[in-house]
Image (cartoon, rainbow, N blue to C red; front, side, top):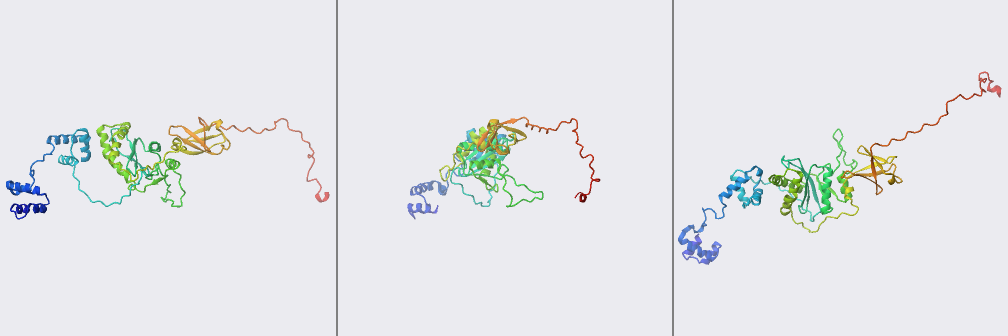
Length: 417
């Protein structure tokens, strides 16, 4: 204001006033003309104290508040609420505007910002498929509207791309089904990163006193999923804490907020509807919003090779010993090898028995599959025939040459000599 007064009194030039105020000479001339009409108020904006010309109609605000007050939108945050107002109700408002509306209507409580401890983030892998984080989340995904379901998710470390599906249980079969879908769509990644759940790691047996064997303990056999990953040539990496696989953990937090509320609005009640909403609505949003471009555009996935029989690899595999009658037990049942497939060295040997996910059973011996059939009852061994004995007839006649022979009446040895 002082510079304008000096320029008005011609104590300094308009150019000097513009340089002092950091504005153009044209704007200085405009302010000098307005100074004659408005006085010192010229430095204040003309709309100060007046409502903004871009303010949204109060009726629109009341309509938005009425929509967000419905039970279906319970728990929505300002960001998600702004998206749904624009997408489903044609109410365009910024996230900050919706936040102010919700605070005024007591639908949202402003939170104080806390300075958290600085955490050093692990850098992302550079290529798509170098490392995939794999986990399952138990949550009330349908909020009691239907059966309890779980979400299996695989997140690529380099791109944050999701590969998820709802299932009925966190079983080995369901995880193998999901693994098969991933392998057929993308190929074999360079590594899977999971927790130490019993699906991926055999539990260490503990003695009654609670002590465990240390480094000297014998190496435990792998689980079915661990064996399948070994046969596929995919390394398995164990995470020592939830924070270590934070990308998939934070992904579940996002899903438990946005996905649950989205399915509530869509009226999802069944497993099929949940997977349909996941594929058509949520995963496209994740790809467009959360996914990032990798540092290296090359794809690190490896294609499946000819010897990778997924039906055989992704099955429940056990080794069984063949009995002398060419049968073997499995799950309290007995299976017999078909006679035409019997070969040398099979009796007493071990065969690889695969319980396929379709319910069938396959047996492999020396890289050759044998046809098997189930026995309703294990064949009984034939009883051994008793040894033949002489027929019991009349007793044989005795010669009688020893009848009159008595040792006591016989001569002494020295006498006989």
